[in-house]
Image (cartoon, rainbow, N blue to C red; front, side, top):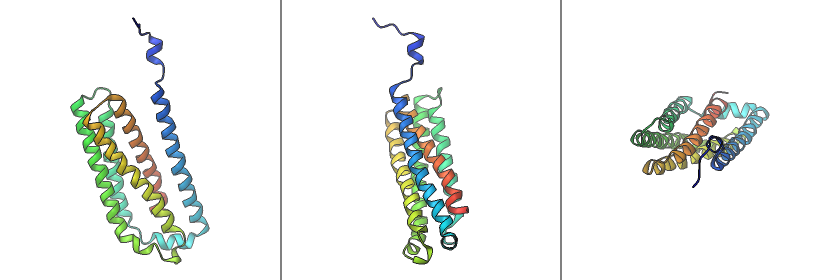
Length: 182
């Protein structure tokens, strides 16, 4: 017979440790790319300013609102008192908003891709597509995982994916002003 003690209940789960390794590795990877983008922007300030004029900050602002609303739904799904049905509904809505983010970003790309080969913009569009595209893939994959978790709601999986989802939100919140408004 195994008796649970208060000490056992407070011990961190090995999954928590792995989750935080994943979170910090994501933050480090995006941090390196954001620093590279910023440094290149300082070195090629005129070219970056000219290239940035071809971006539409209003579309990016819309996408920010979509992603933050999705994050709000993810937070609702992870609330300790949430029922399975409420978690499921919130996860599905978060995923659908994530896919909407992807659709809006692809629409935005369709107007920008033609500028990518213009050497007058320096490294801006190469770094822009690398940075935002890497984020886009994370959002797409994350939205898919949100749907998978909604299918069989288990607390540990909900916490895992919603924590990562919030990391994607945080990255976008830093990326948005650096890329579109600087």
